[in-house]
Image (cartoon, rainbow over all chains, first blue to last red; front, side, top):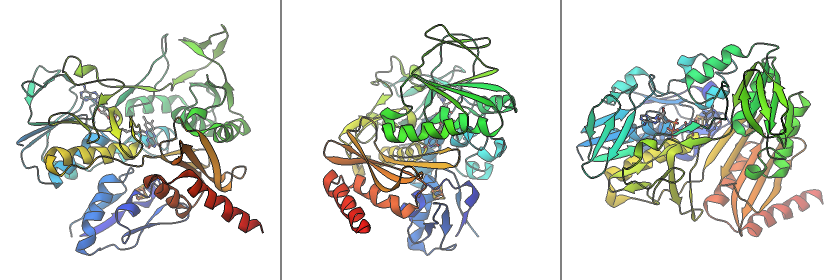
Length: 64
Length: 397
Ligand SMILES: Cc1cc2nc3c(=O)[nH]c(=O)nc-3n(C[C@H](O)[C@H](O)[C@H](O)COP(=O)(O)OP(=O)(O)OC[C@H]3O[C@@H](n4cnc5c(N)ncnc54)[C@H](O)[C@@H]3O)c2cc1C
Ligand code: SF4
């Protein structure tokens, strides 16, 4: 599974960071940063939560 | 649970549908929406779309493949017109009846109107495209209501070269929501740019050539945007037996009746974190509550009270405003970080003896996170703000 982040949609809500700290961070303007494109299985639930909750639909989880 | 129906095909309804599938619902999943489009996002309507930066396609929340993967019984362009709890059915405008074992109500809100003819509202993609096409340089736009929606639209119209008048009945815009200091700061942002913000004026009517004020004055305009709040879409629930009172009234689990939940802008639920019932018109709440409602419907024995810290953002001119918690009806505001005049600050809000809200402009996420945490854990005001003041003093010495 691979995480995709469309940063120019991001509205800096920080919801992804709350859902998956090891996978997402935010820069000083609040825009999300992808720390780990291919997170380990134990982080996937958090990433799924982030995908669902991101108010900007900026995150996708794709099968490879 | 074999048949689940979700009414309202937008942020909350989509989040509910996705969660239902993700968490194992493999029966029928009907998603009913009265708009012609697949679920799309509203916040960009008053921002990127109105500004002409994004085309409508960009607002779609999911790709056709994502939607297909949900295996939905998707009923678009048809409104739900009735609900019968006794036999578990939803009636649709095309005359059909859909039976359910579980129901999620996510029908959102619609804009309030003003007396008179004409004027724009801004809720749907159609609304936004219609307004965008009219906001050409030099056009005179009157915006009625300087809430977040009206202020965002005014800022975008100004940037597009329109002559903008913003009319607000309160003495300071948004003061009841964010406090006087922050309200005045937002006021200055408009005035500095030459947006004619006029407070303390009441619009009584939209006319062919503008709006009429309570004192009889006519304010001329080429276009009028009415942004005076919204009403929950609950008419279709009349006579259903659900309790409706400024939204679908729910318990702390977002349940409105047995196997019936509500989520998003339409839901008024009891939020135990703040010890009160609330209805939140925020994008993140729609998704979070849609997810919670879906989980509770599928797993009634594992329900947890829905107790989020609400989150809201707004873009106005060069400012990104972020707000956490429940600010309305606060007793006190304190600037706890940064500087108000530099438009880089965090304001904390007290209700009773607790920190109940925080609003930030131009601050890095780290500066805000601790305040979100303080709200989530119900931190005592003096404990939270006292420490902050002490630290500020240390920095001075
Ligand atoms: C212009 C604009 C800008 C915004 N900006 C921000 C922002 O910056 N930050 C933020 O946090 N929030 C913002 N919001 C609020 C955010 O968009 C809403 O909180 C969110 O859309 C709520 O989602 P929902 O699914 O609950 O309701 P809605 O999005 O209102 O969806 C409800 C859906 O149900 C449909 N429906 C209604 N009645 C029926 C019926 N009887 N049968 C079938 N379907 C029905 C409606 O047509 C609609 O498609 C903004 C909203 C607008 C309009
Ligand atoms: S949740 Fe979405 S909008 Fe919020 S910071 Fe993460 S990517 Fe950006």
